[in-house]
Length: 297
Image (cartoon, rainbow, N blue to C red; front, top):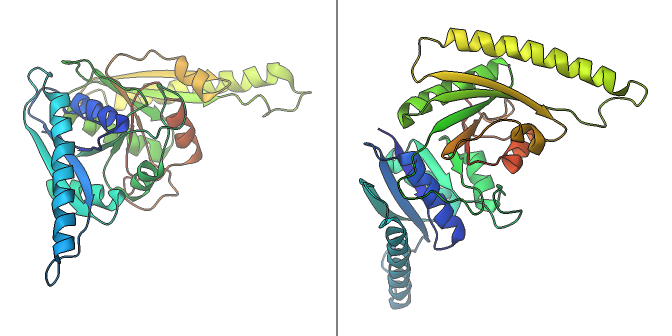
């Protein structure tokens, strides 16, 4: 059973995060927990009348916020096992991390900042801090993300770099795909930077390098698929290249209800999410929601 915690605020980003949380939870036995964060109130040894009024205001605001989330989920058929909670903390980042630990969440979901363009992800202060602090997988909803009532998650794709760290990421993605009840696809991407090669080398040399990468990566994907052949859920592979991350990600087919998983940088803190430069670029270019996995091992 998967427990999905959504960091919810009464704004568009909160509605997008809620839609992604509902998609990840699915219609099975998983649990969806909607959490709003309120500021901590000094309560020792006793609240003053002013502090009591402020605490009451915060509680009423939290209840109104959660009522808004409940209204967004009312029209979803067969959605059950939803819990609505508030958590007091000194910041949204700390509060969501604490709440996720308290409820034993498997995935933490947040929305996108309002910068950038619709349909793409943009990291704000809260989502960036969450990505650096969380010991859980963090799911990011793009701007404008919607999931029609009854929409099911269809597949989890995992970005693959052919390294030992990337192999660990695939295994973690396989575990999560099993929890979510969806097939796993392993995808390798390459970006051909037009400034990478001297002008005298020309495109012939560039094409030779790309062809060599394709051959090597295809062999690595085939070995990986063979090694995991006996595992469940089923695994497929794909590879794509382009002159930008947007073009590379556009070379593969994306299903409605699909999510892209990324591994953390090897430079990150152990058992924490930490984005490397390529992961950050993929997040900004991804046409589907992204699930960032913490470093394993």
